[in-house]
Length: 192
Length: 119
Image (cartoon, rainbow over all chains, first blue to last red; front, side, top):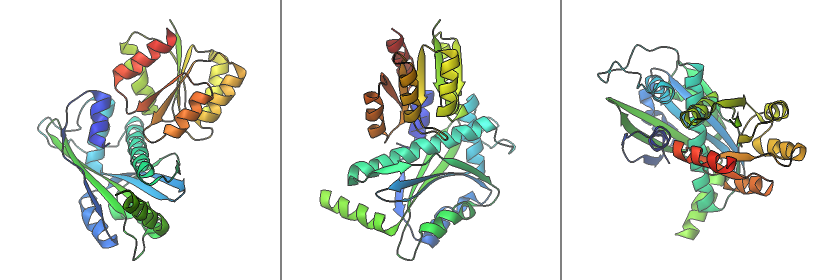
């Protein structure tokens, strides 16, 4: 499951979808990978507990968030018709609700996959959405402080797709406590 | 015309569901944004069908399902879940939910499920 596939399913449209890239990165690598959201970003955070705990953060650059909200709410891509971003504006309450729901669906899908692969059970919180003028590092400061250590590497899933004449990029960052990382890797090793 | 209650904490999902059902000819809707509101609206509006999200603040969908069915054992309820919530869906079916749809869903799947339940 990816954002592009979710959009395609719900709206019945065809999107140009590339295969998501998955990486485990240390703090520095994560900040570098997310550097393109310096113009501000929208972050949807879902916390999970159960056999392991952590946070999932769905992250979009501000312009991409405006475009995706436009696609979902009124069928536009938030562009000027030539693939350029329209003048940045406030994202409507309905647009933010749409992005929050996308983050919720994707977070649930990713955790479901981890649960199926490992046999671990999780409970998810309801999502919360933040719109920030700062970049991705600021948006991820809290989970980074809580879950990142010298040994722990968050997983990052990076996805690109195109709709209309625009290209969009989004990220899902999975923070986990260290025992969880160990648990996942050992369970996966048992099954492969 | 059957009355359909849409329960979801995301205003966007309520809008999407309503728009898709309107296109299929349905026109009578009531809405709620969490499980507690859902119980109050159900008791007042007595809808023919409830589309009930699972993960919501204040009171979740499973708790609302239990309470609505306790007050009205004939209540027709369809759960709306995300991928990865299969255990909760099974629990909901055991508690009396008639069917479920998984988000993100295709509009045709939503309409078909609603038509099946309403007969």
